[in-house]
Amino acid sequence: MSRRTWSHMQPTTIGAAMETCLLYARERHNLSVDRVADRMGANKWSIYKWTANGRMPTALIRPFEHACQSPAWLTKHLCHGAHLLAVPIPTGRRIQPARINELQAACARSIELLAELPSGLMTPAAVVTQLTTTMEMIAAIRAAVQHEETELPLGYTTGDTDDN
Image (cartoon, rainbow, N blue to C red; front, side, top):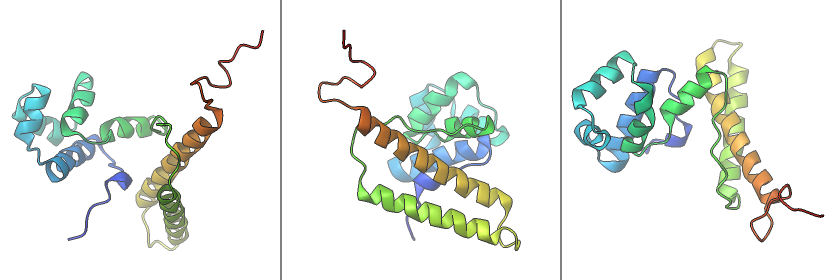
């Protein structure tokens, strides 16, 4: 069985995002729904109900994602619903060649799906999902490059210096 590529997951509904978080918790961290509920201080039946009907109290979204130790799929889905991209904050690490290769593969896959769209071989939802993933990767790398450019040795950025 091949390993799942979690970084490219783009759930299309809140319920699917919650299921993805729970699946990630089970596969990557061996956390059952009971253990996720214990970490949140919630009832496991509440989690099942929220997943089934796609309605979770807003105040519990971050604790749920934290308890699952998962990427912020619910938060990203809410951003995408508002036509926004979710981009991770730059960590200050240099961009690795592997990330550039992943970006190139994502761009190639996006173009491939776009080419298949007019012929009906690909659904618009699949194309939008791939394009969103690619745009988020580009935005994250852009933020990292911009962070590298503005970083000065003493922790000051170019906007923080005072030349009086």
